[in-house]
Length: 261
Image 1 (cartoon, one colour):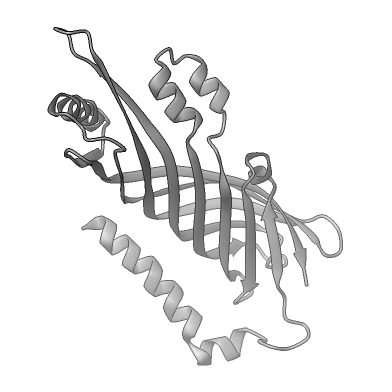
Image 2 (cartoon, helix red, strand yellow; image 1 turned 30 degrees about the horizontal axis):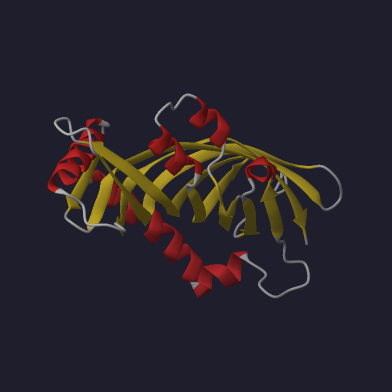
């Protein structure tokens, strides 16, 4: 209940202020030469091969509206070598090595600046909404040994899917001027809370025996031990499907450089 009220309050607040023509004409100079815009990018994303672009526009002397878009092209898992180094089983190690993912997020936000200096050069608090979508794909390599005969059956299941998060949060930071048109935005810390939902699965290249199906189900059931998440799943002779859902709790920080025009 609280989560839905929080989403609605922030969204309606941004929407009402953003579309009110009377208020916009009074406090903004849309289309005029002296109108201020700030275009920024987060430097902390670059080492992770992720790209970010943020646009901010003053609405009043102490309020601005903005939108932040980031994306990560299809790439390997970060720190893959460190993650796979401790895995001795060859099948899950190979699956992790072949894992690739991409990411897209959009963050509408409002900023409240404190003090009497220029709107872009003050301490601020910023409520925001954040939607993120991750797309992943890999191959699940699986083998099962029959104890009585010693026969080993192997199967490979190409797995692909998406994971989505929708959250609301608040960040605090400080933005200041470096040069005439160059600005630095230090988002000190932000925290958000929301929901996670998604779907993934794949089809086996060979029929899965009942023994392999049961073994896969036992492995997937262990995922439910992760707090605040659940993983509904189905396993049959030809395919595996999983639907994760739960809560999303996260923190954010950024050091961005911007150009004012």
